Image 1 (spheres, rainbow, N blue to C red):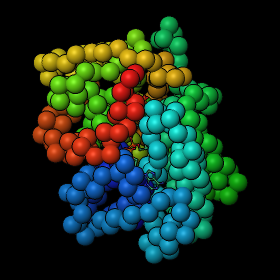
Image 2: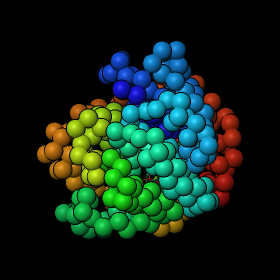
Image 3: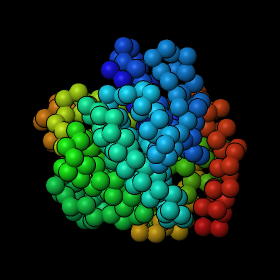
Length: 337
Ligand code: NAD
Ligand code: TYD
């Protein structure tokens, strides 16, 4: 079995590469990644020497490069993690989101048709469903919830999902889509809430909470996401969408307070809210549970402890990021917020 993993130098793709190489030592994994600011070869360093792992630097939107890789490698399965993934950056500059998330997906779909794959899997997000009101805790996103996006990021991910469904319906491409809630865990880029707060506490910087901090996210340990995708690849039905989430809703303030308590310090600073800020995300995972038997294995209390410990043990990994080009972004985003 040969699996092409795009975006494997990023947070979830990197964890997925590690997960699959551990679980299936006889599979070939090829990672295709453009190495944008979010891609990090340090994440893949532990597997670079493995004979069944290959890394190729390329842009998923570069048709010639992608066709060349398919021609050479002839993957059986494609799992597309490659994306611009940060909502705040999409508010600053939407163009690259459309280029990578929509046009890049189209190139991968065309290549999958042209060279033939047994499965194309699109890694999507619960953000395509928009948000839920804070005063209706009884509501959840199911696979039937209408697409209703808020940010250029979620709009671009929804555009990609619709293309995947169109390629399945029109061309019979054997495709699946998963829509997961917020992930956390090792190798998470420190611009996102949890790693940013951990890094700021450890560097003695204030903890910037947007608005009143009451927005709710549904957190899932990244390894549980990897396990769900593994199940979908092996047992999921083509043409289907699977929601992934573990009923672990927390307000941003709760999450930040848990990090402060765990590290024994940290000072919250309320800052100007994000434009169009989604109120609440909450996944109903009944379908993947009933059909594929998936359940999250890691409780938030354990997962957040493991995550904080990973950031304590791997300071070099994130300090290298913070000392680079990322500093300019931080200044632009938080300087006079
Ligand atoms: P990330 O930003 O950490 O990593 C993205 C990776 O894609 C990076 O390695 C980057 O170099 C690569 N990439 C970007 N543009 C590329 C291009 N044009 N060609 C090739 N590679 C490119 O993102 P992540 O958090 O790991 O998210 C991975 C996927 O999961 C995304 O599709 C995202 O929408 C989805 N997702 C993320 C979450 C979450 O909580 N992080 C939740 C649900 C779904
Ligand atoms: P984020 O990690 O960017 O994920 P997403 O927006 O895709 O859910 O943000 C998670 C939540 O945390 C979101 O409600 C925005 C909020 N947030 C802050 O309050 N401060 C921050 O510095 C960041 C990055 C996010």
